[in-house]
Length: 356
Image 1 (cartoon, one colour):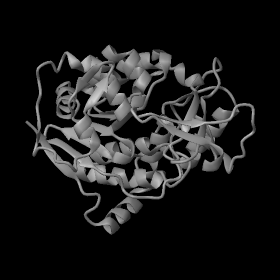
Image 2: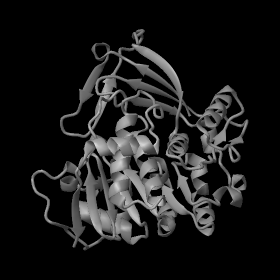
Image 3: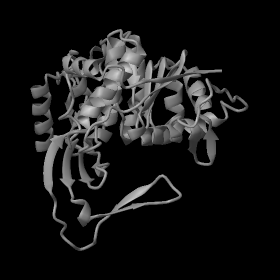
Image 4: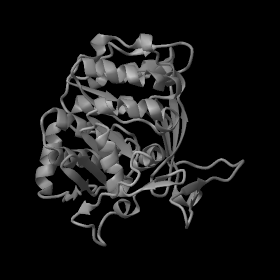
């Protein structure tokens, strides 16, 4: 994607939060020019954000992307070169322009985003070559519309190469091709979802979890994160927190990571679930924080780090990303992450449970 980010002073745009729903809105006056504090253009999009994150962490990285044949594609190609990401598998397709997005950032800086996916929707099985997947780690970002049909082939090719597979599917991929996605989970090592994406999986998981109501041990107290109490829900179905994690992990992933914005992240495995809170930072924009966490966690696991260390490193990288308005400017290298973890001492403090 090419991201255009407009920062609006809070006094010029209304922020409305619904009292009985987890939903908020930015309201603009129609027919009026609204002054912006700044308008800037950056490279972004989940796949590109992850590629840059991995490269900055010191991993030899290549990206498989589909771009249009236009100036936006030229900008992204230059960005890949600048970041040291190999472009051997970057494809151009003149049928659609390169993807673009407009971010409107105000109040809490959790931007409203208008997205045009363009060439991101055009990935086809013929675009996939075995040599592209001959890696230690294959990270599959969200796949848009028609491109989501390639997901099973991508997973199979990565599995056949012996790679560790990390996947962060998008909400439309989960809701539109749920069956195909669930059928691939036995081959995925690290599955990362945000809370909204996790909720979208609940209807498909509800019958699998029928009658199974495991509990967290020790029992969560009043200080437990809200998601632990709330659990997951979608389309009239609901699953308790422990049931959701146990059901997904039973389908095959080695790790299930659920991010919950400012409430931190939860990491589940056969050993149980732990919560990693966010590292406090001055928030300029939230775009790319989830990608930074997921990419850093996957990289550290691939490098042999324990999950707890991987999550703490991921939290530090995500905290750095939110100090910048764009999705990539705050991404750190490994040495800086280690330095910041050393300065933090025992923080972020993890809370751990077993599932019984």
